[in-house]
Image 1 (tube, rainbow, N blue to C red):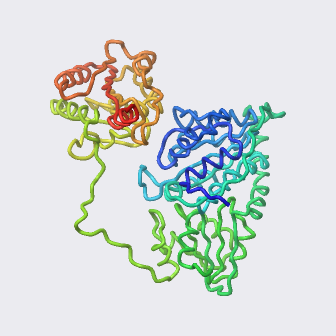
Image 2 (spheres, rainbow, N blue to C red; image 1 turned 180 degrees about the vertical axis):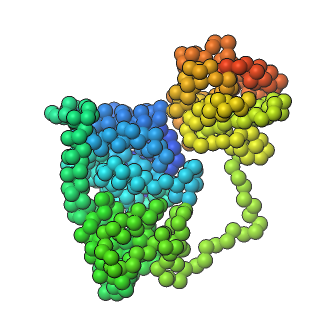
Length: 531
C-alpha cells in the first residue's frame, strides 16, 4: 500500500479532504496553522470548491463551521489551544444543539509552551462541553481519527473534539490514505427549530438529551478501535497512556509490554477497559498535559484499589511535555540521560527581523516616552511582542489577543498617562475592534498603535483580514478623522514618526496611529516568486 510522508497536521488535512470535506474554518495559530494551509494548496480543494479562506478569529470560524454543519455538509474547524477560549461560547452551545453534517473541531495544544502563553489542556474543555473526543497517538491514527471522526460525529449527532499536541502536529510519519468520499448534499435538520434555537425551553430539552447521550458516547469509546488493551502476565503495574504518550512508552518495549497497558485515544474514558487494570497493584498514567485521566481514575476505582501514579504524585513532572527519557525513568527502564547542550552553543532568543517595520516603531516610541513619567505600553500577541526583549524593552504587558487596547483603557481609567497600546493589524481585526469601540464610547485618552505589516506574520504570512481597511474600520468605530494617522516606519521618517506619536499622546482622547510597511519576510517571498 502506498504511504505518504505527512506531518500530523497534513495527515489531518488530507483525511478531511478524503472524507468529503466541504469547508475548513480557522485562524492561524501555531501548531495548527499547517492544517488549513495544506487544504488551501491541495489540488482537490479548487476542484471540489472546498471553502478554505481564513476567518477573522476562532469564534467566527467556529460559528461558520457550525453553520455549514447545519446545512448538512462536513466541516473542519481548526485552532491552537488558546483559540478554543475565543470560540468557547459557540463550542459549548454546539454541544447543546448538536450537529447535522459532521463537525470536527481540532485543538492543537502546546505543552511546554513552545509558542504560546500557556499550556492549557483542552481535554478539560471537551469534558466541560461533554462532547466525544479523539486524541491520536501517531500520524496514521490522526488521519484515521479525522476520516472516521466525521462519521462518528454524524452517527452520534454531536461535534467531535480532536486534540493533538505540538509534537504530533509537527512530526512526520508514513500515512496510508483511504478511499475518497463524495461531499454531502445540501440538507437541513427536520427538527432545526427545536435544536438550533436555544431559547430556555429548547435548551433545557437539549441539555437532557446531551446528558442522556453520555452513555452512548462511553459505549462508543468502549468499542473504539482507537482504544486498545494489551494484556501481560506481570500485574505488579498497569500502565494507562493517552495520545502521543503511547509512542514514548512503546520505544522502551519494542518486543512487547511486560505489564498490562491501556492505550486511550477516544473519550469519554472507557470505564470497562479501565477496570481491566484494576487487578494491577498500581497504575501509572502517562498523559500529555494535565492529569485529567489520573484524577478520573481516582473516582472510577474504589478505595483501596490500585495506587494511582503520574503527574500528581511526582512520578512525572507536573508541567511541560513528556518525552521518551521522562517516560523511561517513570517505568524504570535504563535510559540515556538527556543530552546536555554543549557549552559552546549560546542560546539565542528570538528577535525582530532585520528590516522589520516594528523596529522603527519601537525605537521612535521609546524615545518619545522618555519625555513622560509613568508611561506604560500595553502590547498584544504577534511579532511585535518581541519588543519586550533587548534591545527595545518597549512593552509592559502581553496577555491575550486584543487585550492591549482594553488594558490600556483600564489603566487610563485608573489614572495612567500616557497609556499606549501596540497591536498588529491581524490581531486588531481578530479581537481589538470591540476594545477600540469601548475607548471611543468613553473618549478614553489612549493612544493605539496598529503596527500594520499587511499580513499575519508570526504564523507564516497568512492573509490579514484588515489589509486595506484599517482606516475605514477605525473611522467607522467613531475615531475622529483627524486622529487616525498613517505613517511609514522607515529610518528616514524617524523624526516625523516621533512627532506624530508625541502629538497623539498629548491629545486627550482616542487616537490611532497606523505605521504601515509590508512584512520584510512576505516582501522577500513575493520578490522571489516574481522572478
